[in-house]
Image (cartoon, rainbow, N blue to C red; front, side, top):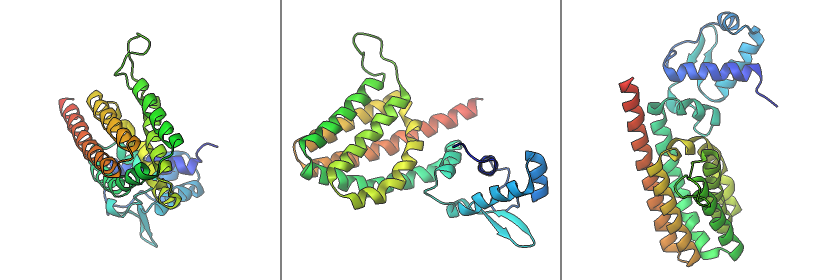
Length: 250
């Protein structure tokens, strides 16, 4: 089922808020004005505002209007909010930093557990996902043909790799707690994965993590995962610098 018109209007308003048209503390246009602009009913606009309220993007002050909240109050685990922030590299910085911190707190320990508990089937699943990443990466010729990046397949395999390690850790409580973060990662993986150097870093790190899990070496697996996440942060910072340079050059 597709998005409702209210959801679509909410997403457009959120893009405008992120772009700075409506900065924190400012009021959105009145209901009637938004309805006329969007060619929608006031009831539909009310639904859009309700969506933004649920994400803590706006607050409604009775008798005064609808006001934009500071970004630190926005729902940090909401995919729609993250999707809007992705389109503004500067706004995305803090979100990515907090996501990487959360990943480090969870995934380093998960890699350690996976190395201690993994079965042969678990190991095969991690290795298969890494093989799919390598094939989609555009870094290695496939059957003698020129290698081309398949970004969608690469990102899907990257996620499958980390999911397989989570499965190998054998702790469904950790998996359930991490799931909202995993959803957000699907929306941010594409940013650095399009960069060749970042893919080279990721594949090398994934090889080291897999090798430690295969050896049943929890300390090495934890160390390799921590180093991978630090490198991911550095690759994101490099991507962001490139984005700023590109905007300045235009």
